[in-house]
Length: 316
Ligand SMILES: Nc1ncnc2c1ncn2[C@@H]1O[C@H](COP(=O)(O)OP(=O)(O)OP(=O)(O)O)[C@@H](O)[C@H]1O
Ligand SMILES: [Mg+2]
Image (cartoon, rainbow, N blue to C red; front, side, top):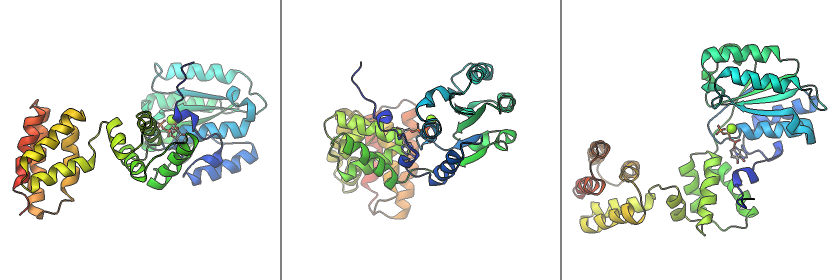
């Protein structure tokens, strides 16, 4: 017993009803569950939007208690090629389904297979069509060969909105009896970009620090907090170079951020500054230049300090 619970597993939905967003997929699956039969499927979508989760919920609803015997998850990319995958599929398919007509094989990261391997996979899908249904998971459906796509019901999973992410995170917050401020959830959403796995991990890491605030979230994400970077920029814009420099050192040393993180956040902030348009363009160009120098091995504090001097004259 490690005693550490991983929230991404603890709060993974077990019923289709609990899946957030993806209504278009869930509704179709419900109909098929009722009929007791499903087609081969392709779930396309970015990381952490529910591809694996939906497949697991489907298996539970189709098979009830026996779901584990009738469902196999295989990763296409971490095996030594399609032959291993086919071997495993064969072994699994050979055993009779338990209380059902077919089993389900969930093939993660199918788009990492080469076109040749996908052709082999297509033949495998066909030869086991009597006893197996395949659910392929992929980031991009365009990387799946046409003969497979045409044999599957293709579902494009949607990205998570801020509201979706909040709904999910609030389940965890309630379940764990946590306190989190609204801005912290916003920060988590912005950093995770709608990947609920990443969002959950940020929440858990931040909670482990004892509090969930934008500051703790940025800290565990090792990302520059936009408000800190903006403060540094504004100090420079108003000519307070020494203070801007202090803020920079706080970010680099006390917060342990990399120069790259800070520059990236400066880049994001520049376009929203209240300065003349042509100065913005100038600064964007400078930022590019200094990012390049950093990549060439320039020292972080010296380079960003030099970059800050360009902000001193950018107000007018
Ligand atoms: N639509 C969703 N509804 C509820 N929870 C979700 C949803 N999408 C993702 N999650 C949560 O995020 C985590 C990862 O989800 P999941 O494994 O389904 O992602 P995925 O789409 O398969 O991503 P990957 O491409 O990385 O495999 C799980 O903890 C799950 O509970
Ligand atoms: Mg997955």
